[in-house]
Image (cartoon, rainbow, N blue to C red; front, side):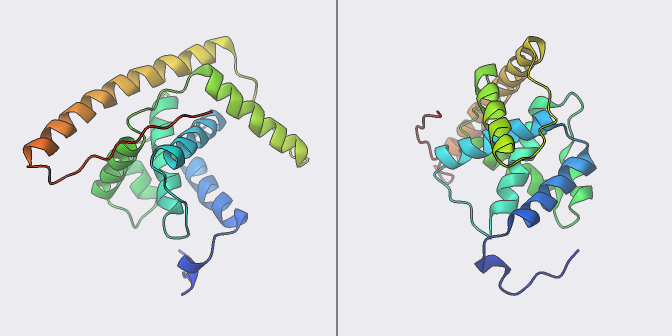
Length: 188
């Protein structure tokens, strides 16, 4: 709702601006702290897999795409795309759907988050908070929650892989008008 300065797309946003954007989404959609960790996993995967750089003109869409997917994979009561459109008034449902599909393709439909990966991000964030004298309110990951995370992400990954196969068949039937870019990546 704020007026966007003319040079907005020329300068990296400050951390307060990014925090406000993320906080607004998490508050309005009532997302959990665990969802934030899964969001971070997806952001790093996207940057690695798709070799994309975050810049002033794309950071909001990249973060929104990661939050959208993480909320669907992690939270029991996932937020629908139409709900995000009510939070962000300038985005249509069709745009959200397309962004989600594109994000999934760039992640190569790898949305599985093993407990070991979650734990690595959890402890990295906890260390970062300690180093900066910040409180870290998230409880440690229990065995039950770790198993739930792996099960949910595996189910979602299987569902999206089926969509991926269907999308590839459609794209090949259109005389390769839509190129599917694939690249291998290793996450540490």
